[in-house]
Image 1 (tube, helix red, strand yellow):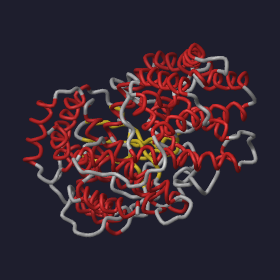
Image 2 (cartoon, helix red, strand yellow):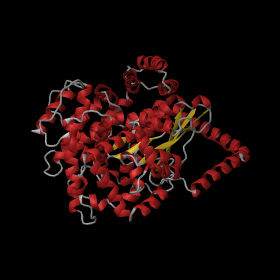
Image 3 (cartoon, rainbow, N blue to C red):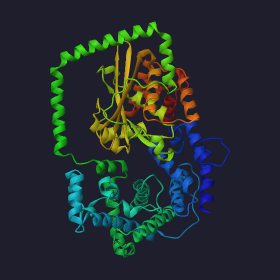
Image 4 (cartoon, one colour):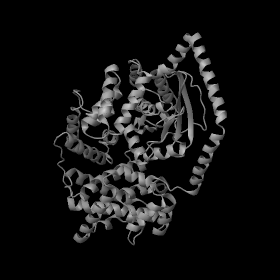
Length: 576
């Protein structure tokens, strides 16, 4: 019955996107997204692009597991929570007939889940003293002190918010000792136990916040929470590595319930409804003395750079001669140049200018290890203006946005939206940074939930443009591979597309025929000039600073000149 209701509502909300008259499934959704873009769908659904990514994951889980005896109900409730949110935005009525639990029981289950998480962490780290030592080792001292100030006699974990507690549980250094407990086919909706549990805990957090805001908890939320609690309780009962008995955690008197609701409200003030800020606070590792020494070392390096300035002048002179020679060669051998460009655009050309500090083991076997449901999550960080010319600074935004657009419809890649990147950069006060070293890029990548960072630099001189890309492993901060393309500045659009193909090649992505055709079709549109690429970048900068009027004026001009340039059209739609 629940599956029928979900399918009806899925079909109904997707009529807002397209006139496609067929029962919606994940493949049809991907076709719709390929046609409309993520930005357009998010706007029509009344949600943000990061929220759309989470919705897509719930949608994938639903279609994959809805008929599974163990995971079916959880996958149904996960998509139901998202449908409830979207249907409210679209003024569509949506509810489930099932009613097993009630709001009072939901409050007890929220409290029980919080206590269960605390005790699982305490038990597996050897008691509250050891927990404190572990947290002091992993997180900033001021963060731990804040938790201690709010804690009671049960230990430091009682001073955390639910979001912080969830992220502590899922921290890779802690979860590796706990994973065996939660490893169960009942919750394996994603590629790992950790990711699967993260989705469930995030749903619980949203329901918990509804209680904290004195909002009426919906029937869907109550039933989802009941399903989550029963599943987690059953897993803990059957786990051999824990002595925790979930049945003892639901005992809550009326007075204790009132105290708990009060604590929820205080907790909600702390997080201000902003989960991204919480993740930033919890995920950031404590800066140890070794990192401070690195910072000191970087300052010394800058001083050395000043001393060797004359040497740099000589190197730049050499670069000028190199580009002049290359241009002369290109003029006398146009046929060979066109052949090389054709090979690159097809994605079959030999990768040139390769340099590496390591095997690209994190990405080389991407297709062998994953399907689209396990797509590698890539964050494209703004490239550095290596040439230092101030007028070129804003190009970093346009270049990143165009690469994101080119790569976002490839199923094997999950590309982080530029909006989310801009939000993190502002929170971390990095939005004015002119360069990102591997450590900073790795830190930003962790906050974005990415596995690989793509960044690099660009350099324009004497009518020649060079784009260099670096692949950074988020976990280690190590540069996995570096690659680049160059050509005449006037051919910016072609150079940018060449870089997109090299990224696909370096990641060893095997494109489907439809994906390859879509990219090639995009390349046949009117080429965006270098000047207009800078102009588009300026519009993005105005948009990020909140000046939507100036942004729109530029975007309308670009859309008139380049009717097929989707990034400009999508941003205009977002402004509207």
